[in-house]
Image 1 (tube, helix red, strand yellow):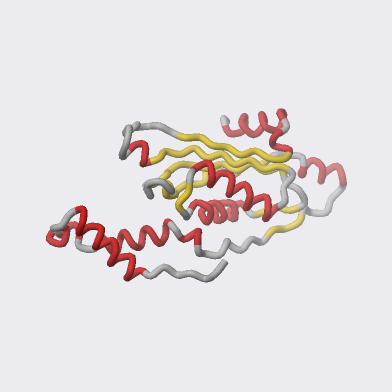
Image 2 (cartoon, rainbow, N blue to C red):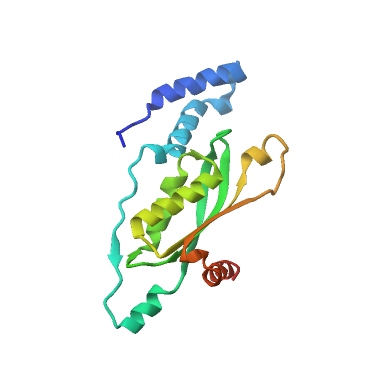
Length: 197
């Protein structure tokens, strides 16, 4: 991916021009004195997954042990979460806020728990649809740890639903992607049962 660094000054200037169209006297409103800078900083952060490098991942191999013990490790699902979801809806650039859970049936590689949050944040920091970000996170995790199975579940509210349009307060969207052994009925049930504990 080519290196790209957004121009903070240019974004601030364009936010100022947008405010001129929406609220011509905004410059006389003391509470909005630093609004263009704040909006530019927020947007740069919210788009950073598009131009930041993927976080470096240090995986490690399953420990050497007897076949019985290793089977008992490898054949168990583990779940991490809730991981905060903070993203922008690609249609309106309004916030998507919620939580994410990841279920893994490990293969021969393991990943430290904090790395799941770092990868998720990198995936979420770009304009997206919730269905897209759910699948993209599953894709990234499959590429990094090569699991036997993976599940990603996101539950989030969309400001484009609560702040505009139908203004539907409390509406949540749930999306999930299950792959590999997590599609097997017993393992799938185990994943969702563990989430309900």
